[in-house]
Length: 276
Image (cartoon, rainbow, N blue to C red; front, top):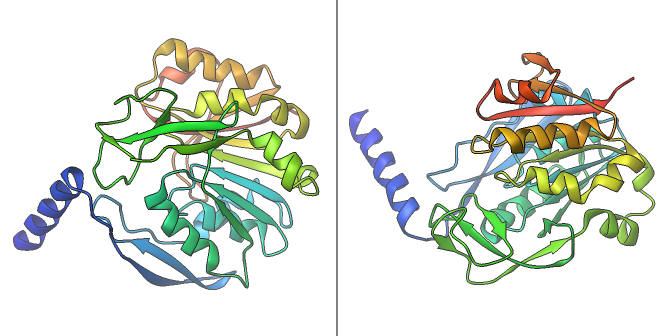
């Protein structure tokens, strides 16, 4: 047991300091409603092993109706994309965005699995106010996560992609390529290493137009002022905010009643839905 722990610890330290391409393995899960499901787990030592469960699908099914459009911004390897797509069904559509080329390879594989149950289109872009090219950096040499900046910066870590990544305006892209789906938009999930507030700003008119449920992350390093701005951005669009514990059916949920409430938890997820 100790030897296994030491090997795993060494592998994680190595992955943080040195880049290498990591393989993946296809795992199979049996869900009570959807049946057998496959998922490609990335064998990067810094990435936790992912299991797809019926409880996860049921969590998203609260917000995503079958046959609707859902959008995963910061889809990573697809750990939320796949249960979102199972909730939407084969007759629905999930657009999964991630500009990190190393995780995108795995996201693309997961998008190709479970075709009998899902319809996923992976897209290698960041969501930004204006179309353009951006720098991408990570705190880990293996690029299991990271974030974008307009100028070359170590804000998200010392390791930089050699190539710039492409940013696109979401509403502009939807109007150009998915116009027949916009009226079916029910759900947007955002998880972008503290960039969520800027994305919400960039999709402001889309939120006004379609009123989808929004799931976002309040990043631990945000200041009280930034948390308040995140809260007010959504409230101004007619949304109510709710803290939730995890992407599982029956998870703890608490209403966020004021901007001050955004300081009750350091790093957390919340969902926002239009007040009735």
